[in-house]
Length: 438
Image (tube, rainbow, N blue to C red):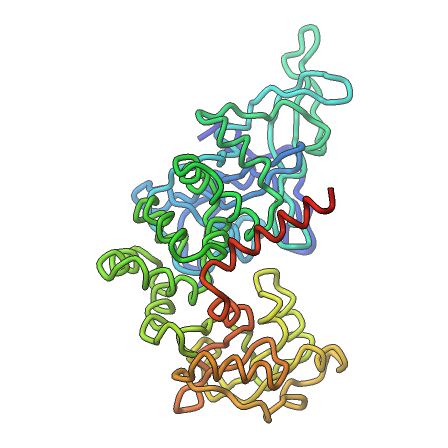
């Protein structure tokens, strides 16, 4: 570990109460990590980031945490619930696999500290002493500030220090073993998942696999969800078991279940054994249903709240970036527990109704109890007819005991109703439209 990373900073953290809004990573190193119950997990040793094009602020992917027996593991930044003075709190199950960097990833303290860079405006050489990350409105942590030291003059060994914006510095470009893949990835950064999937299919098989392996787990999961079955089965087969399991864990459970149905029983079981238990449980439950039934179509992660939750809480829940537009169109009101299968399903709170009500209104006062739920054995045609008849973007699925099992969204139904090669035809239509525009 870099020596400076273990020393206290000479400059303050920006704080709001006890919650830190800007975190200088060298100071964070060595901080104790706790689970939600207050039990110690380990200590922060580094942060993992990915550089972006056009000198945009790098995005933090997660923390490297040292757990007992000096094992270093990766904790996604999305699992970090709070960073307070002297403590980092995380949630969820830990993946105890030993951490290794992947293509496109960089260790902030291990690789960026002590790097010689330049102030863009004056071209003055400075040395990186620390880096500050901040959380933006969408919830991403970005490295926005760099604490640097200028060269000393005369007999002075150290020069003046200052904290600059990331964009004010140059010289962070990193030479990679496979620069071709990195350059290609940089041109694909802003593509939608569906468009990136189409680009990958146009690449030579070898380069397609190289790019897929270099993508982040979440990004690759989104791309696989946009591919047809044959293409994503082929790509998944090129990933080593643990990486494939990580990517499956990032996919929507219904898409992961569809994919595992196609890879063969032995391979599917091996990947399920490697997945996080809570992710594997959801996927395995969906695999027990027929592919073209309501149970096989549904996602197990709709927005679920109790009747005594407020409109403000419901709007905050559907505002989360990871919630798809279709799932965000309504909140499912149930009795506890709220994880599927839930307690008794009560009804639906529609987004438009939520927007018209005062924030303090309880969901129990505005819940729609007229919308009937489907059973998991309902056919694809029944599901499609139901969505069309009542102009819904999603529909609840309940068991015989009226417990909510999940929800089916209109996009999942379309995926199964359209011809198998519809994605390829869609891309050809887009290309033709672009040519007409030219």
